[in-house]
Picture 1 (cartoon, helix red, strand yellow):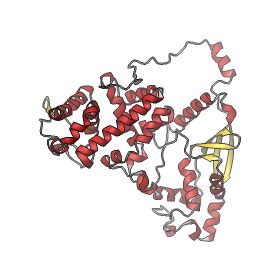
Picture 2 (cartoon, rainbow, N blue to C red):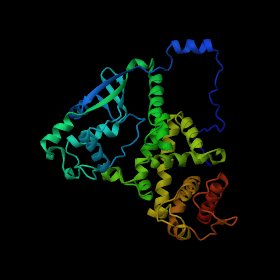
Picture 3 (cartoon, one colour):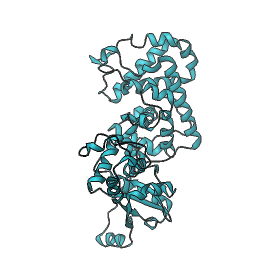
Picture 4 (cartoon, one colour):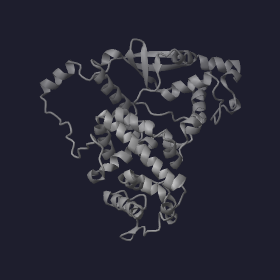
Length: 386
């Protein structure tokens, strides 16, 4: 695979070793207050949440946060919980400057309250107050309005003095975010990466996941379609689209894939965050160029399996990974490929697609040897036209 200048991935990256410490040294470390969170608690009337968020003092989307996931039905059930006075867990905030906060956990709850008081949705799919369905806040009976207004959202605030340096602050915030989300609605591997290994390359993956042709081939709504449409896509809600971008870059080092794919992607992202700016720019250009070439040759169904493989008509990683890698290998000759686009597309699965008696593009087989065989399959497809 052709490499970009500065694109270096060290397979056996040295891990931080655990240092043996005496009990006396451990006690001294504890007394020094290393890695100790400083907090305070607060309560906010539900009715005040909209004004709070409008103030500009609350950052709703710090880099480590997950995307919004809740549809209007789930939002409605939170409002119903206020009506019923159901106890709710606290939100967690980080004071990054005096009286300015990042929302570490509780984004969905805060934005739901904001949206309901703003009249952005009507109640639906309620469990116990069916008679209120279809009503926005201003349409609720006055006593019900007052009941919601009287409720509070409690918070735990991590104070600015928790960290001594900006670097330590970032590390501690990410640690807390990971611990907060170790229960409840489990984070996907990519959501965890986004929280723990955010950096320039992670931000590039998020940016590239918005490529319109990429999203079309993966049947993911476009950003311009609006939040409600985006929330219909599980791939978007769980950041699978961002992971797909990361896979493209990491699989350029398929020879170094050992262990689980999750660990492999983790390590690549951590190292890629340190790539030089020029390298990151070059990789951005490569991804966009490959996506454009794939789309122009194969169209909307570029990542669909052969007909005999299809149980559902949707894109598959078993096609995406090798096809993108093969096109990337030949990207400097893309003009030749594009001149023969129709013939290539028509002969896409004319070669034998069985390997050692097994279907080559059977999605559950993700061993490096099979992935390499799939890449070779597409290399052979393109060879006559280069």
